[in-house]
Length: 395
Image 1 (cartoon, rainbow, N blue to C red):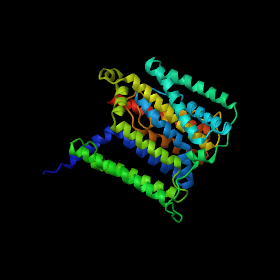
Image 2 (cartoon, rainbow, N blue to C red):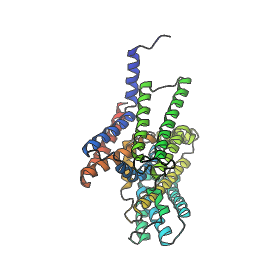
Image 3 (cartoon, helix red, strand yellow):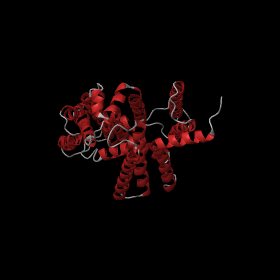
């Protein structure tokens, strides 16, 4: 069989890189930003304790970004997620601390209330065609006010230890490693191996149906970097207390939402809805129901984030969740979501969230004031959106 000329291979690789520049660029940007702050902080960024804090501080942003990505892909926006998260944290404080309700039923009730809030907002957006910007802006004000009224302007705490495990707990070392959490290390290696196995299996299926688009060199480099990063970060965490419970929660949710968006009918329909709602409706997709479900899901994830925030702070506070919606939306746009809908990936939103998190953490360690931090984050968001618009106009 004749081999493909090097010039054709190079042209194919160049074309693929150009078409997927945003995806590879985000991954490269995260690596570069981490390297920059690792150098500027004198190695503090990747110390196990700081890595643990990085995951704890950004877990709720990542969790809400998963839901926000679906909202944005569907062609909408949700400005209420920070207020809903704060309200649900306050509700947990009232139930568990003030009234002594059991922890597990209270958590389940809070998740149901969060989903109900998302459903209520989704109802007006989906079936009454009221713009999501208006409905969720109203929700942001309503639930911020309700949280203040519910808590009487005071913090409520502390929570029981069992509730705090949502955020501050760690996976126990069942193997009893001496100075190294072997359970954490094995879980990390297993996750990396599962990721590689899934990627190889998907590529083999593409080869079988002659639908491979990604050159092998890019496939190898991308998955190799991700697998190495998982093992390396897991090793660093294993030298300290191991894997935080919230990291396991994030990993499970990321895997679940990646599967839903990539492998299921409902995931494909959400992208079709955001790409062209009229065409989606004409093809038989029940677009109103889909929008309703997307906002219901967002409300549930905001509730989960609110519980994690309360567990991390060990109290329900009136100011919890303030401006979190900005970080969540910024994470999605930085991660490649399109402001016009129909475009975006779960992995991109997660990378975007960690780019924001590493920037926040690194600038805080360096002593950069909160004023300049806001300026820098705003500029990064603006650049990401300009880049998206530029690519669309060029196409």
